[in-house]
Length: 252
Length: 362
Ligand SMILES: Cc1ncc(C[n+]2csc(CCOP(=O)(O)OP(=O)(O)O)c2C)c(N)n1
Ligand code: SF4
Image: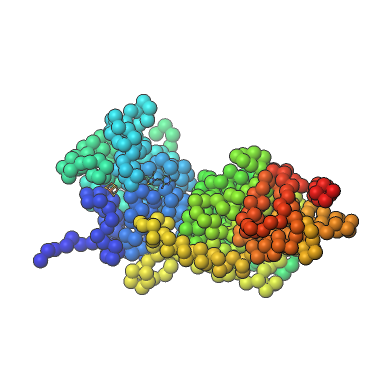
């Protein structure tokens, strides 16, 4: 008899096994999210929005109300829902392209307005669904389909430091963290705090997650983990970046 | 519960943008999402000034993509939500509106047309007809009312919410810069006082009960894996649209039965055409007047009927044939001569229409 690992209660059994590639980090992020929803007992309150990109494959992932939107537009859809019904816990789930490229203006503006929503952004350093093109988060020197000789920072700039940007432009009440699929327990903690922050009505909550894409990285299991744990963390620091509280005064 | 913004009936003299704000209020719209663009700005100005005391809400977004998508969010949450835009904003709005088409979201949009293409003028045109009726990367499954007077701006703004929520197609009120900015008298009313019941709204997400236990979760999407899956969805949508079209289509016409030449126009241009046809009739010209009020769906049967009887159709519009193309499509096969008076981005007077008809008739 084989023992199956426990699925979060809010996962939808009918849509499992899920549609992500084997070894994809999305499944782990959604596991951490599922556990956080279970622990907070908010399955009947959550409205989950997913973007275009591999995140769209989560359109029927949970037994929670879900709307799969357009590339980059999940943040305004969840904002619109939350503004119209403050009872719900709104989650906008997107990739790095969706959040930092095409949807950057929405992320910046939602953060600036301190929208009471939770955005979770999966950083896999490239565009997964369209076949591995360069993303705002592609590391310097990293090869992708549209940076075949490696990302040249002179022409393509440096990778977006998303959480650092969001932390800088949000006011008190915002929660910002960067987690990784290499530490799901810690990630669940960050996501849980991000949801609690929304439920308390404090302000915008944002969690970026360092995630894997073995398909487009063309990596085996060992190299996949090495890339997430060693290469990505050189650039993207894991941890809490901002917790609710008054904004620091100038010069302090 | 705050009192109704309009009790009974009230004769007023105001700008079109003010009329729209009052009409949306009278229609029990809950929330407006918007981004400033001339000539629709004052809809937001009046809404934000008057409506908080009635418990209505507003969000100023970062652009029209966001205004459209947040409005879709408001509708998903079950609110009577709307937005307003023009020109380049209408262009951006087509992306969220295509999602509204895909998910059958009753989003209401007021468009106060300005000149085009691009930023053009902030004043006036009828050049947003193609974009508003057929914009987006789909089949144009939407409803477009083209208003001509402030009274209609009031009536059809209220109606647009009911059409949207009854049939679940995104619905537009197509006004223009003249209507937005000029003052005119009209009668405002509480819809209930005229026996108009507002179609109840309902949420798509965030309902009571535990999803997966007490009820099925909502899983809305606009992405499909295979062609056949999408085809099946669209077949149903198209059948719904075809069934609803004759119920939704509206028009105004007179003197068409014995007319040799029928003048076709929409929006404010139809006011010039109406006066011109009356004047020409008095002078003995056998002319008629036809005006589609819905540009999508068009009153197709009536247009075919008119085209079948008349020898000539004269299409008059402040655009280079955007209405003309729509009409030619529905009367395809008819051999009636098609004539035109097109003035893209410029207003048209009664005198110009009279002169054009006399030029044709010699
Ligand atoms: C307006 C628009 N532009 C482009 C696309 C094509 N597209 C689909 S997914 C995608 C990239 C997604 O990358 P990311 O957001 O990083 O998510 P991932 O797939 O890596 O999870 C793009 C560009 C689209 N669907 N819509
Ligand atoms: S392409 Fe990459 S990100 Fe997308 S499902 Fe596959 S592994 Fe995951």
